[in-house]
Image (cartoon, rainbow over all chains, first blue to last red; front, top):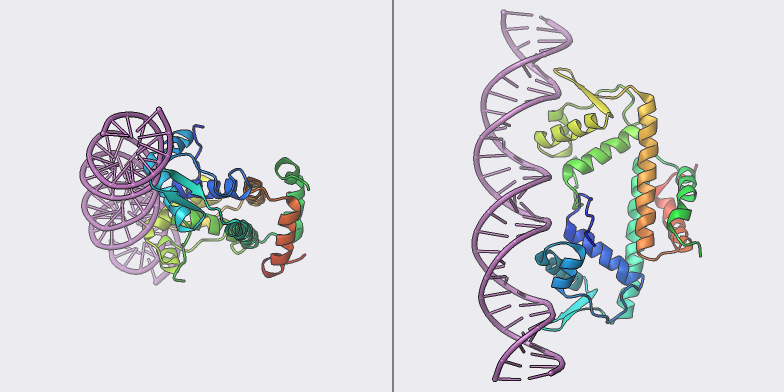
Amino acid sequence: MAAEFASAQPIYLQLVQRLCGQIVRGAYSPGERLPSIRDMAIEVGVNPNTVQRVYSELERITVAETRRGQGTFVTSDQGRLRRLREELMVSHVTAFLHDMREMGFTAEEVLQCWNELRALSLPEE
Amino acid sequence: MAAEFASAQPIYLQLVQRLCGQIVRGAYSPGERLPSIRDMAIEVGVNPNTVQRVYSELERITVAETRRGQGTFVTSDQGRLRRLREELMVSHVTAFLHDMREMGFTAEEVLQCWNELRALSLPEE
DNA sequence: TCTAGTGTATTATGTGTCTAGTACACTAGC
DNA sequence: GCTAGTGTACTAGACACATAATACACTAGA
């Protein structure tokens, strides 16, 4: 992966968000070991220091834990992961609604646009 | 306004987005003059250089135009404003759906969360 | 014990953002 | 013409982000 970090947001925050998403949707299981800092750096095409920062942040929000000399692991606390999932959804939906309101869009308009684009992006069930 | 720029995104981009939102929802009319660089800087609590950058960006995307010695004005091209409105909605909805997908949320889950939060944020009609 | 693979820490460099201050050119109105 | 209010341009400095390179400490396994 050669990495595409187009957004104006810092790379390390984008990576934190991406990893949280992968963890939350089960791409990484509870307790599973994440790639080493050096491997992940190569994988996403950034500097190892940047990945270290990402892993530190994941640890700070108690989503991952590091064992010196062994690696960094997704937390085994499944309750924490469920809460994370809920938090992420609420924060994203809230921010989305805020933006839509700022631009004066009505619920109807947004839903119509949503329905036109949904098929491309979200599983139905 | 003392300004709250908590996001990791650069202030000038947040301001561009905010102004686009205000223009698109009609807080500023087509052809209306925006506050001067210096006034806007005071109003939102940032440096005049930052506002200059914002106005330059608005001009670059043909949403505003500046007249030396007179001020910066919202474009009179209402077609451009309609397109901007559409662009903003599509890009926001697309990004939102992308994020939701990244976290493995289903359309049903998102809609449920949406309905729980909608009343606080969006006008119904 | 030795080695390879971990995370951790430090220093240096370049870039972008934001602030601060100053100066200049243009326009409108007196 | 003069003045106040515009946008424009430039230099300088502080700070965060990202990279680069290096060194160190810990762990597991041969």
